[in-house]
Length: 109
Length: 109
DNA sequence: TGCATTTATGCATCAATATGCAATAATCTA
DNA sequence: TAGATTATTGCATATTGATGCATAAATGCA
Picture 1: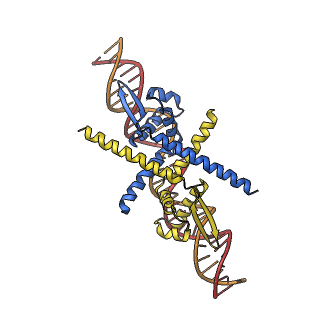
Picture 2 (picture 1 turned 60 degrees about the vertical axis):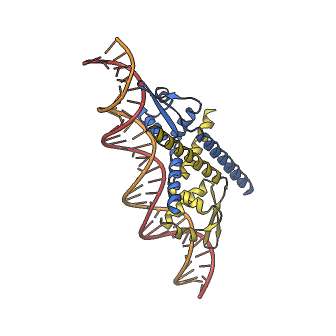
């Protein structure tokens, strides 16, 4: 069924697009092993507070982050730890690509 | 070493950004189990020939596709089959996310 | 209630990407 | 060599996404 595959592909590309932004990746890694208050995240980033807020929102909308309100503060955490397997996988792929390219560069001499 | 991590993160996000475009994902899947001539790819896509050419170029630049010239034709193929493990991984992640959200929606009733 | 603190949103701007048309480059064939 | 075929590139436009400032919304506290 082409219609279904198309939907899946659309969703898939949306996930990748979300991950395809360095600031958002940085946020994921920052939250990897601990929930953090936005008030702790902001000072650790160079972008404006509003920018960070939007990036966090996108990550949450995609279902990668969870948020919890406590008084006036908001705490973000990893909603789906499996995302880090995806990131590891990507890094592994990049490693093999870089190695292959290095090998080909040598062979081309 | 922050500098190195930063470089890795930059590369990682670039890979994800490349994958974060439906047409490019479609091209990868199309080439999954066979090398194809651009002359066969183009008619299968709705975008202009020049657009496809550029997408193929980006995928090759990232090291995901290989190209081979034969006469006036160019054949593209998967350079790194491991990319499909990444795609499977992404689909698995999306599945668990969707399932979780469905569960939460029920619990919220 | 009034004020302070924290996060999200409206809005404008800038930057990056995707797209299509036209032209070019490369190669084959008559 | 002239013409045909195939893929890439130059260029302009449109779309999308990122950014920061100012403001609003939500909550806690005096």
